[in-house]
Image 1 (cartoon, rainbow, N blue to C red):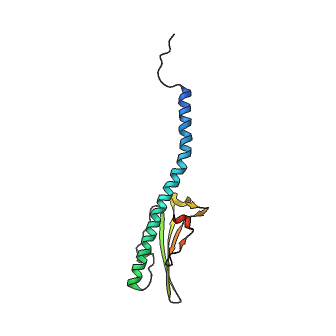
Image 2 (cartoon, rainbow, N blue to C red):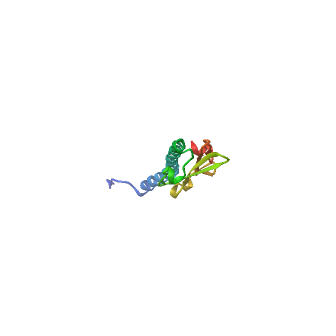
Image 3 (cartoon, rainbow, N blue to C red):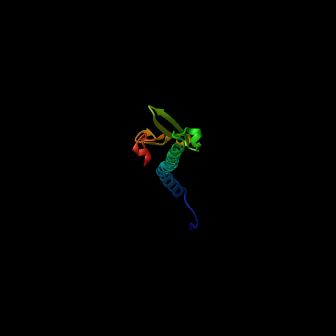
Length: 131
């Protein structure tokens, strides 16, 4: 009796599903990390843009701007804020991007990447978050 059946056996199908599951288990964390880094890059771009607007604002007004004056708007994955101060006649500011939603888990070297930049170009929380 000849066996002319065409198709896959259950064992072949299960091996294929297992291989796909293993590949997905390896690829998904890398993809998620890539997405978080790309969203962080957008936040860095927004902070650097806000830094330039702070300097433009100071040229005109001789003080730095707060969040409303700077026109910062929150994004899908970060909330942006700016605080300005004058201490002993010296003006300063800090612009902050705080992660929200699915971006909250973004970290480098165990430190959450809630980004900050100051008028002295000090970047926080660590250099790894800015790369």
